[in-house]
Amino acid sequence: MNKRSLSPAHISLLLLLLLSFSTVAGAADTVENPKHCSQCGMDRTVYAQSRMLITYEDGTEVGLCSIHCAALELKHSKGKQVRSIMVADHDTGKLIDARTAVWVMGGSKAGVMTKVPKWAFATQVAALKFVEDNGGKTASYGEAMAAAEGELSYSKGMQHGGHEGCNMDMGPGAQMLFNPSFGDDIYHTHPAGMWMVTYKFMHMNMSGLRNGTGNVDQGSVGFKRPTKYSYMMIPTDMTMDMHMAMLMYGITDRFTVMAMANYLDNKMNMLMDMGPMKPISQEDPMKTSGFGDTELRGIYKINDHLVGSLGISLPTGSINETTVMMRKTYRAPYDMQLGSGSYDLKPAITYNALSDNELWNWGAQAMYTWHTADNNNDWRYGDGIRINGWLQRAFGPATSWVRLVFSNTDRIRGEDPEIRKMNHPVTGMGAPTPDADPGNYGGRRLDAALGLSLQHGAFSAGIEGGVPLYQDLNGLQLKTTWFLTAGVQVMF
Image (tube, rainbow, N blue to C red; front, side, top):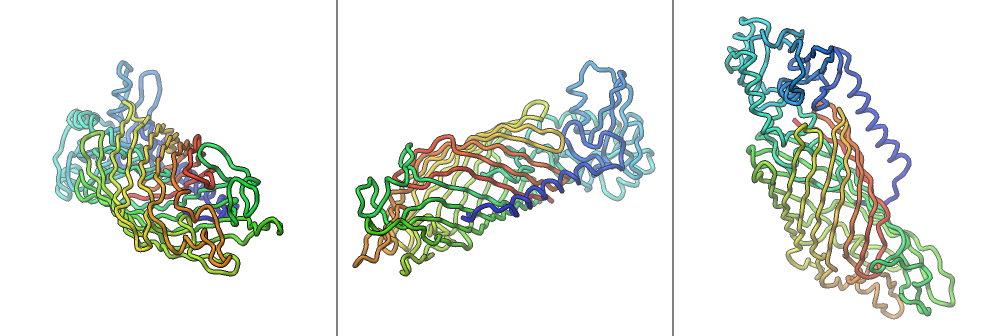
C-alpha cells in the first residue's frame, strides 16, 4: 500500500468509474422489459440469445437471462399458475414459445449460466443446422428444463451475474468474482480455461500514536525531555497506497493458479524535536515508492463449500530504501521498505455458501503468513494470521456487503544494522524514531468494512471502505484510522 493522501482527483476518478459502469448497465433498450434478469441481475440485452420471459396468470411478467434462471424462478414460485413461457430463438433473438421450441443441448458453443449449453430454435431445420456446426443433440423443452433443474444443486458456487462461457460449478468463493474491491483476496477456483484479470487501488490512512489499546498524545513523546517516550523524530501521520494487478487462470475445474504484483507508494509526516533548547518543528516527510513483492498461488477446490490454497511471496520488493534525516542519509525504517526480503508462505482455507434463492452469500477465510527466514539485512517481519468473514446481498446488477477482519501479527524478529543507526546516535548524528525499533511492530486489530460493486456482463467495478473497531498494538506506533479499496475486473 502506498503512502500518499487520497486526492480529490483520486476520488473523482473512482466515482466516475463506478458511474460509467452503472450507466452502461442501465443502457440496454433492445429487449423487452425488464432489462435485467430477476434472478441474477444480468443484462438481458447482452444475453438476448438465451433470455426468457415467464408470464403468470395474474399478469405478472418475469424476465430471465437463461433457462437456468427460469428453472430457479419456477422453483421459487411453486403454486403460481403459469400463463406462458417464452424463450429467445437462437438465430433471430425473437421470443417464441419455449414449450414448443426445438432445443439443442450440449455442443461446442458455451451456454449461459449452465454446465451443459441449452439453446432454443423456432424450427427443427435451424436446430439441426446448429447441431451440424456445433455439435450437441436436439431435445424437448421438458428435457432441457429437467437438465436445468438438475444443475441447480451445483449452482451454489456461481457468481450472480455470470457470463456466457461460464460454467455453473465454480466452487467456493465464486460469489466474490464480480466484487473486485474486496480489501482482501477471497480465494476461489475457475473452470478450466477461464481467465480473470483484476486491478485494485488500496489506500490506508494512519494518524496519531498508540501503544497497546491506549492512544498516546504528542506531548508524551520528546527528545531529552521529561516525557514517557524519548524520540527525536515523532511520526504524526502516514498514508500507504498500493496499485495491485492480479491474473488468475483455471488449469482444471478444480485447480486455479494466480499471480499478483503490486506497486507501493508510502509517505510519513513527522515532527523533529532537537531537545529542550529548541522548538519542535515540522520535518520534511519521509517517502518511498516502487514495486513490492510478487505472489504466486495455487488454489484447489476441496468440495462444494471449501477451497484450500497455498501462496508463496517472492522477495521482489526492495528492503534497502533510504531517507534523509538532518542532512544525513539513513536506511528507511521497516514500515517504509517495499518488501519483506524473504520467501514467505501463505496457506489459506476458504468457506463459502449461498442461500437457496442465491441472493445472499456468506463465508469466511483464514490465512497464515510465515516469513521463513531472516532476509539479507538480518531481520524478518513477524508471522501473522488473518481471519476474514463476510455477508453480502445481490440487488440486480449491484452487490453490497459487510466484512469483519481480525488480524494478529508478531513483532519484527532480528534487526537491520543500518536502521539501528537511527535509534543509536553516533557522535550525536542519529535520528531516533519509533518505527526504527523492531519491537514497535505488529499487534491485533479488528476491522469493519462496507462495499458496493456493479456488474455488466464480464466486467465489474466496486468500492469498499472501512475503519478499525479495535487496535492493540505492540509498542509505540501510528494507529490506523481508515482504509479504502476500489477495483475493476474482467473475466474471459
